[in-house]
Structure formats: C-alpha cells, structure tokens
Image (cartoon, rainbow, N blue to C red; front, side, top):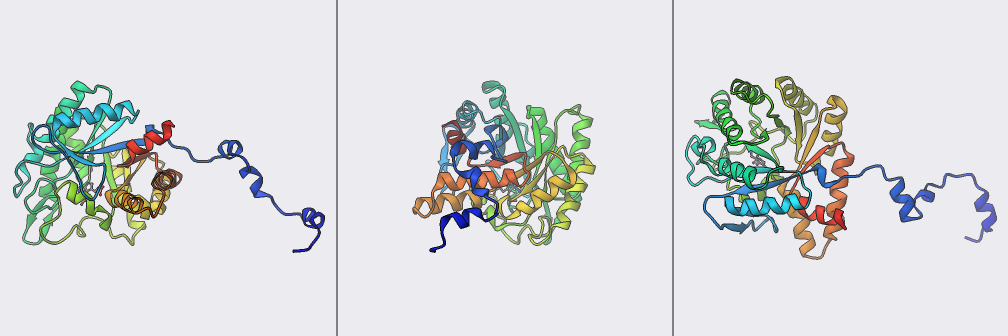
Length: 332
Ligand code: PBG
C-alpha cells in the first residue's frame, strides 16, 4: 500500500492492459468480428393468409403465412442478412408426414413466393419430418422404433420437392444414418448437382429445443429423439458424425445447439476445416429474452457477446433468431 510508486513501476511485469486503454486500440486489436453476412434467419411457415402469430416462448418470432413470409423476407434483405431457413407447419399431420413432400406444401409455396418477390435472398430449407407427422417423430415409427432406412425415402422426397420449388440449399436435420448420401443421390439424379447440402451433422438431443417445438408444433407425442440425436456428453462421436456426413457429400456441416457446444464447434472446425455452421437455438434465444424482460441482463450486450463467442469458437455461419436484432446493432 505505502510502497513508493517508483519501485512498483520498476518491476518488470507485462502490461496487458496497455492495448485495452482506448476504444480505438481495442477495436484495432480485436481478434473476432462478425457481420450480417454470417447470419441465417429461421422462419416458420403456416397455412392461410395474413397469419402472423407470435410464438409465446420466443418474443419477436412469428409463425407466418406465405404472404407475411414474403414481407418478412423483404425486411431481412433490407437488413443485409443474406439467407433464411424455412420450417413448415402443415395443414394436416399424418403418420408419414405427407405434406412434407407435397409440391404445394407451405414451404414449397414459400420458396416460390420468396424467389419471385425477393430475388437475391438465399433460401435454405430444413429437411425433416417431425413437423409433419401426427406422432411428432422425424421419420417412420414402427412399434417404439423410429425406423432409419424407410424414413430416408421420405426425406429424399421432401428435399427433392424443395429443390424443384427453387430453393438454394437443403439442410437435413433428422440425424438418421445415410440421409446425406440419399439426398445427394436423388438431387444429382434430378439434375440438381449444384444444390448444396448443409447437414445438421452434430445435432444433440437437447433440452434447448423446447421453444422451437412450440413454434414448429413438433413435440413428439411419445418418447424422445435420443435414438437418433446425439448424447450431450459425447465429443469423439461428434467427429465421427461430421466425418460421415462429409464423406456422404455434405458441403457445410453444422453443430447444434451452439452455446453449450462451443468446444465441439472448435473441434469440428480444426479437424475438418469445412465451412462450419452453428445453430444458436430457440432455448438460447428464449433464455436471453426472458432474463432481459425481467431486467436481469442487458439484452443487447449479452446477444452480441453470445454471437461473438460462437464466431470465436470457429463458426463461419450462425443460424440465429437474433439475426434481425443483431443486424440493427451492427448497423449503428
Ligand atoms: C427438426 C428441428 C429441430 C430444430 C431444428 N430442426 C427440433 C428438434 O430436433 O426437435 C431445433 C431448432 C431450435 O431449437 O431453434 N428436427
């Protein structure tokens, strides 16, 4: 305390604070930056017209009919967000999720409407059956088994109708074995060689999907997704999953969720050096929104910190419900 100042100043220690003293220098030495270019904004398509219904557990996120989706996409593009990913909620659900591969299904209509009215926006589609099946599972169910190979047939039909409607990329999110190869094959057979596949490669069986299942009305009626989605405890297995998808033809690999799996993102990026996406999922969004509504955290600050962390971990692309909010902050 009463050591003379001159003596302390003579001690030979590193002064790491020097580069933090001014905002200018802090921004000059900043290692991680992200822009709206990295964002993919998820959208939920419902039947009807003029429907815009907020998802109660995801403030600011809406289920929208095709006409409203088009308006939303115009706003997304004006915020310089390059891409959206579409999820569909069908009119009727059945055992095999028939509306998923109906050429006039909601997603297929939305693709055509966006391509016509908002040209230049990159349209990705989620390929999965859980929103479309009466039991809420991602494929065919027999007894208590979620059947792998027969489900692939449904997924390939779904992916093909998306490509035929004009989407720019398909994103299988089911986690069945062999789906990337099956989808690549059917796309190639139908001359869609140039449609890339972004696979949900390391997708965990996560409690963080809760709010999404309200948004997509896809909660399983019985059982869970642990026989196909990954155990949160595993990382070596994540690398095997990603490797399999790359070998089968994935162009971009995804880790999902993002925040509790930053180590997996880093590991996947370092191991494969592939374009890597991270899905900042519904529960991650809902937690921030809920705490901010209570005044417990600073929403903008936490949002930007979260996105920085995902980018720093190695993600090239971030699927996030924060895309519009973050775009506005980046614009300031
Ligand atoms: C469909 C799918 C899910 C999500 C994306 N695609 C839900 C699930 O696997 O149950 C979750 C996205 C989110 O929570 O934001 N299989």
